[in-house]
Every structure is written in C-alpha cells, then in structure tokens.
Length: 171
Image (cartoon, rainbow, N blue to C red; front, side):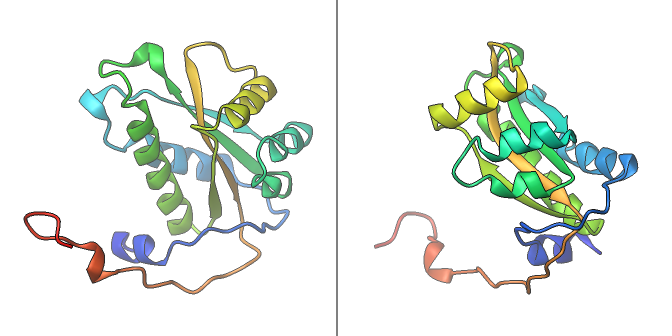
C-alpha cells in the first residue's frame, strides 16, 4: 500500500481478532511513530506497550471511550516527557504527529487501531498515570488500541473546500 492510499483509507477500528500482534509489527509501528517530526527534534514522545490482559482491562476503564482496549491484544500509551523538552509545550504536537504516523503505519501493514484521547482531561490523565505508574514529568497524551481488525470500513471522503481559506480568513 502506498503512502497516499494508506492515508486516505485509514479508519478507526474498534474490534479485533484474538490473533496476536507480532513483535515485528509492533516495532514497525513504533519506528513509524518515532519517524514523525518533532519541535526542534526534541523527540519528547514516550511509549508504554501494554499486552497484559488485566492491565488492558484497567486501561479500558480509564476514559469513557476506551472500552475497546480490553478487546485489543495491544494497548499503547503515548506520553510526552516534559523533562526532555527544548521547546516547552510542544510535546503535544510531537506526540500527535507520532500517533498519526503510528495509525497510518498500522493500517499499511494490515492492523487496525483507534486513537483514544486522554490529554487534556485531568481525570483521564490521572487514571492512566495511576494505572501505568507514570512518574511526574511524563504526561499521558493518548492511548491506542491495536490489533488485527475484525471489521472493515470503507474510506470516507472528508475533503471540504469550504474549510480552505486563501491568503486570509474569508467569511
């Protein structure tokens, strides 16, 4: 699958088979995540790979929208290391770019994934922090449920020309 096809056909997948994600597949998506651009090349992203069933069950209850984590063979917790920042506050952009790369790479190699928001909701971040033993200076950004898809979704065209402004904001 070429890059444009992967970008345009990627969809959020919430149902997964019992087939395990291999270490090679996991490394591929993590390499893709870490290939993302970052502010000043600070690479402030950090990743927690969760395969333990009980731990995934706990994370599935960390937010109102993370139930699918208990059904996925892998959960990834993406965090920003504020101690590693050269440019304070840009960890959110760094992690977001890494997550998008990870999602597209997962789709390109035949996996399904969904992005589950944590930051900036303090209660959600506190739940994830407690579940994973995340220390001060590390901020939970998001979680990803990852696995072999049990569902397929057709690509959806999301281009909206009215969202594009030229040279300055128009009407």
